[in-house]
Image (cartoon, rainbow, N blue to C red; front, side, top):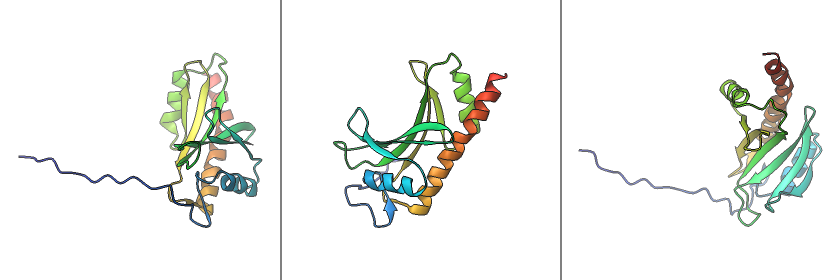
Amino acid sequence: MLAATPVAVCAADQSSPCPEGHICASDPQGVTEELRKLGFRAELTKHESGDPQIESGAAGYDFRLNFNECTENRQCRSLGFAVVFADDGKNTLELANTWNKQKRFSQMAVNDNGSLAFTYDVTTVGGLTKANFADVVDWWQSMLGQLRGYFTQAATK
């Protein structure tokens, strides 16, 4: 007979300060400064929810870096890179699903209004080293760079 075994659930505590030398969503100014050091424009603004948000660009696209899982617009736990393309009549589930099957880190989805959301999320609980953050940003830039070719290829099918 199988018996249920209690499992301890631990919630990561992001209420402590970001470790020195690390990048954390709980420190929007630090994320902004590190993006600038990596050569990106980075303007710290606020999302309509009041949570921090950075406006930037890469590979010919403007994008937003959203601060997610925030408590009262602070103590955020993760970052979400996002670009949204307006409905041009070509934003289909097939387009999104094909990308999602082929790509490992990013996600593409068709929103209810027909726009196409392209996203990449990363947790920062405990902090990302500067090298890891640079790699995360490089992956995002690389995925953005692949979009134009993907859209062109999809349009010829």
